[in-house]
Length: 386
Ligand code: SAH
Ligand code: SF4
Image: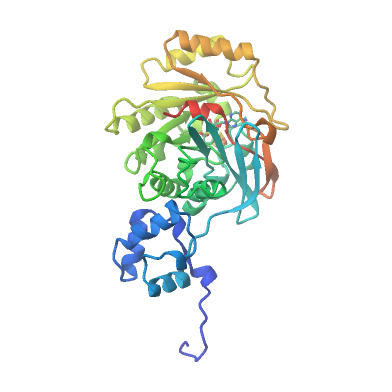
């Protein structure tokens, strides 16, 4: 009852804290605030991320009263799956509907004893790379940490593989779905911390990859927060061309980007690590032998491996995918120059799970509605992993 005698009914649906997206440190603070011991966080993390339990009443190592309290003030809510599709090649794709009415996507690509999950970080993207259909949609909003880590949670849940002993469902994660991860810094860092935490998904830092088109100030401070693997979306061997196809280059040119990525590596204790350079091949734009030679020159002595991504088309893209021969020629020049070069091959063709393919409609802030590109769900993701 308040001072005027009105009964106040707490709106639990609004007030509840979603524990799914809290890092270990945040969950410890949450329990300390409740007057509980720190280790409650560890117990609850195991229930959520090891056993997939969402219902507090099942958390049998917590007291009855704590379970009831959690039920009142907290929740464990993964994002909502709008659709799940399975490819004949084993690729599984989820369209996830998020608040605001848009869809984002996650794709799991199994290969041998590995399975790489491609995760989205934003609804849309503000960076407007000319060959990317996410970029063409504009930006709607950042995903929350719960919505990002929730993609890992629901991938495991969809195989009912909690404690199954079937081996890990997700062995690698790449932040290469929709959005620019470094523009959603805090939530992405929190989600990656859960990916690597033994009390959550326990992936090694080498098996989690952040891909960026070059938000240099954020990249400059990334090493303070994480040591996951880094992929840089370069796509051009010089600033004149990159200014055109990756507009953020006008603000942060190639030299600054490569310098910042190198500093990220230098901050790691493991000195053998390299940056993955992603290069989407666009016919007649950036796929000539001269450009391959220029790229080899640019990256000479740079600690990297190169991942070539033949362009995946989408309606009205204005670009085409180079021929197999053109891709091979480009690959050959770089390989002859001594680089480790992989070519991404498309997976999940029958369910449109490849780069540049479509899953749904996005309502962006400009009210433009555009087809959403699936993401970069291809074998190269696997090749770029340990
Ligand atoms: N925003 C981040 C991560 C998401 S994009 C980034 O740009 O790195 C992941 C990768 O897919 C990037 O290298 C991007 O350039 C590439 N990509 C985007 N659209 C593509 C398309 N239509 N065909 C092939 N690769 C594409
Ligand atoms: Fe955004 Fe990456 Fe697409 Fe560029 S390539 S528009 S940074 S999602």
